[in-house]
Image (cartoon, rainbow, N blue to C red):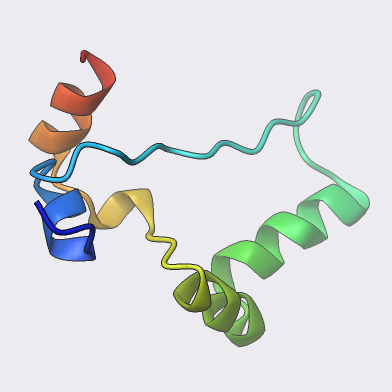
Length: 70
């Protein structure tokens, strides 16, 4: 399968992973600012698009389950 967003969304292309951000407790200060930047800033969106990152919310829930259970 081609390594594109459409195939990742359905888990047809299998070589993908979910990246996580962890904090000790609720995020505050610079950590929270960074999370806000990654989630909503237009510059972050440009970086995500450049590196072909996707929001996990764009992936079919069944594909997420299948991928996580593989």
